[in-house]
Image (cartoon, rainbow over all chains, first blue to last red; front, side, top):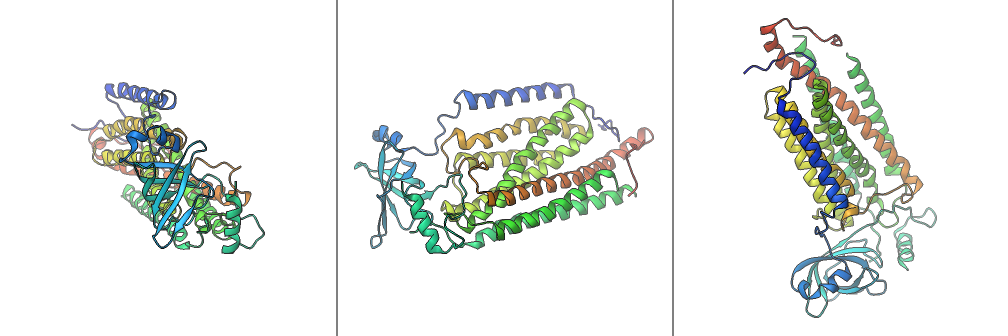
Length: 163
Length: 43
Length: 236
């Protein structure tokens, strides 16, 4: 059937279009409200923090999960011969010892946010086969002077990482 | 392990290059189709 | 040239110059981040792309509602242009994010809430473009795409809030307080640059789409009655 056409400025709509449109706007409002205030997305979990993992230790053992938190200062131990990295992940309340393979991403340091993927062993150690380093929303120039050599950056980083 | 990422400009250039190139390609296509449409209108 | 095309070309000029200067400052003048080093400079394209992608889809929402309320074809032309640009910006956003993620997070991609919701947003709007491409009747195309755009827009606030509603790998939004002053200028310049580029491209696309739609509809019209050209129709 030929479109009633033309170079008219306005289109003709089917009578149902307006009802669909109002329905669509309603769906958008309800869904955003449910997400924002109704906790619709509460069971959407990307990672567990240390406290949640400790609380659910019995069910967590053996399953492939993600653990997220901060690297507890003073717990990093890199065994270069065995290629194993050990550290503790904390959320300020609980800590979980983590054992990861190989070298971590360059920004790995004390107090930085990490997310480890792997499994919790019976002995309470989280064995990770993937270590992700997260970054916060702060962007800062190196503090000391204009010299941004690797050594100075490293010094700044160590300073900032101290609690 | 210094905790600091240094260098790796290739990532920076890739991100900027990809962005610039994509925008230019879309701009070029936009201009091309616009001109064709104007010419078509004038018959 | 019609006025809208002239304004569009002007915006494109402003956008290109601003983007050049902003990127130069971001790549050369601005300091590196204390931890991320030079890789942090990806922020100067990534964050402007993100802001503008969400803004463009929101303008698309306005065009969709505008079409349904006024039935003006002009709104549909804008809708199509915004959908194209929004999809382009969001695809770029994901690619830039992957390039930034590899050296910092250690992975190109992870199914974290921010990344996942962004991917869904991209697929939904790309789907609407595919839908439009397969509908031949202009009024059907416009009304279906408008309703679909309203529904798909739901992902925009979800993408924005995802880093606050859920645990995520992606950091939360930066504010001028969390970004050093020397980094704010190139960030703002590129943000406005990408906005001007988007607006300029929109004006040109809308003009093109208008001409294409008229070419499609005019033969049908001519068979019924004489075609009256709209007054703003200028000479090239």
